[in-house]
Length: 144
Image (cartoon, rainbow, N blue to C red; front, side, top):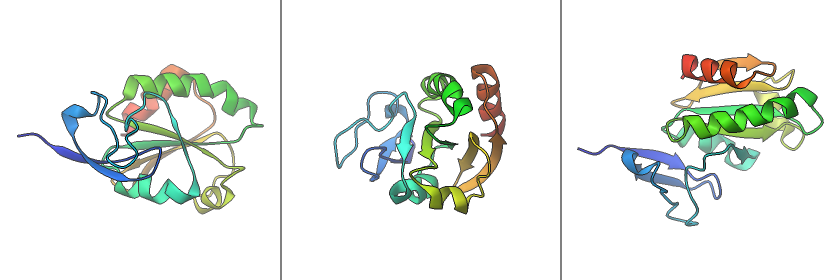
């Protein structure tokens, strides 16, 4: 029997019910028709943050970053590679703390980059500081 999972669209924040085996086959959002599982990190905003954390049945890792942050920019290529390697089982997103200070404050972000892993709507792990690709993949796989 096929298993369905709820996946929130990274483009319009609509929750979609999708067969798990279709996630990596180009599944599209029923609302905006864009790809649900891009093999790259997607940008989160305050408007969709709670829905992505609470309604996704897939683990979610959020990179809290800022454009002026040197370590954030240095880690960005590794984060993009990790997103491509971990899709479709894990979703990677980015939240710009300069643009969304209320979300950053709610989670007590004091230094960036900070990674937070969410599973079933709850924070399960947190890591402050930039990681290379290998350490990043190890941290995510060890905590999700």
